[in-house]
Image (cartoon, rainbow, N blue to C red):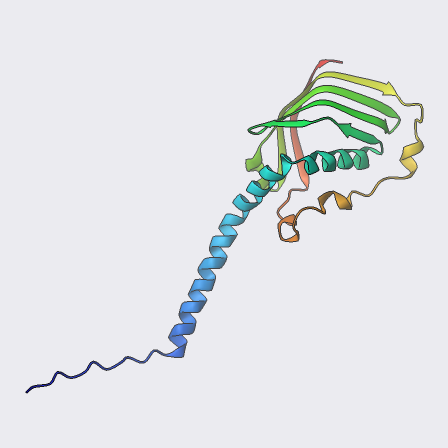
Length: 172
């Protein structure tokens, strides 16, 4: 009887195994880097529709203007936001009341490192000189806590610049 020779096992070298692992790591890193803007945009889209965002937006407005801000409910329809009423008291000596605030946010611009707001406006805007004209100017608020609820690995992708393309007021 004639026996077939047994196939010999090919020994795999450790370098070949490490090369495959290195290639897998590089592919995963490139894929994650390409997906990062999409993941950040998805996170931002989900975050802006939460109550926490409305509260943070009011805090940020108050911190930047030196006044006290209140935003009514924030309603989103795709990329368009609507706030029924906003009140800002004591902002650099002014009280501001806006009714029917609306704006369209271009989420694609986040990939370019900026917020882009289009078609912003208000149905009615009222400005009054505040009784405490300049009392809030001496104690500016800190805005560092405005991004505390955002995970640290995403914070570097969040835009720090804002571009507003026009603001329309129907009644001033």
